[in-house]
Picture 1 (cartoon, rainbow, N blue to C red):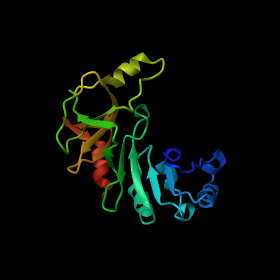
Picture 2 (cartoon, rainbow, N blue to C red):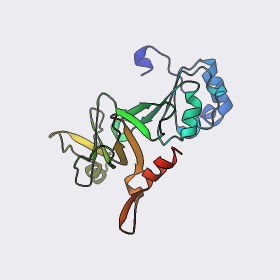
Picture 3 (cartoon, rainbow, N blue to C red):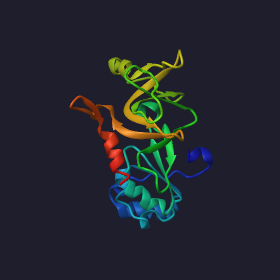
Picture 4 (cartoon, helix red, strand yellow):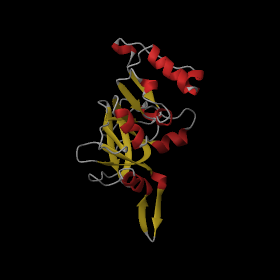
Length: 208
């Protein structure tokens, strides 16, 4: 994105990634306006480390709400989601106070998103299901791992001749067309015969 839009691309070296103060010096020295950071790192940084920043993109793992609120008072924060198998970023959400940290936004322009049940049927708005992603960004599969490729890269049930990637992530649609991330499919448990989505519980707790 940076190079294709005429900007400079600044890549922190190993020492700078390990030392927060050195990373802050780098950001300030080059007046970095946009930064893509993993939430674990962002949570350790202060506003002083990222003074020139206009846009902060967090992605790669769930970001806690306090980090997003803290930086949203200084710059625009985006919550990005996407698996490597779909060339990373698949959806993105412009965070604002009042949002939950689980909101991963809408699919990018070249990405298709489907939320399905165990029978690959589309689920209604608000109902948890597995996220399938399709479109131009879906990779060919795993090198030298045909079984894993066959399991995760499947025929698109809604568009013959195309493939989708089974993310294994549990999500749900919001009324405004955004997606909410609830966790991994395998985090589901049963209690007295009822299926309980642990990610959904975490989602509610994060808003308290």
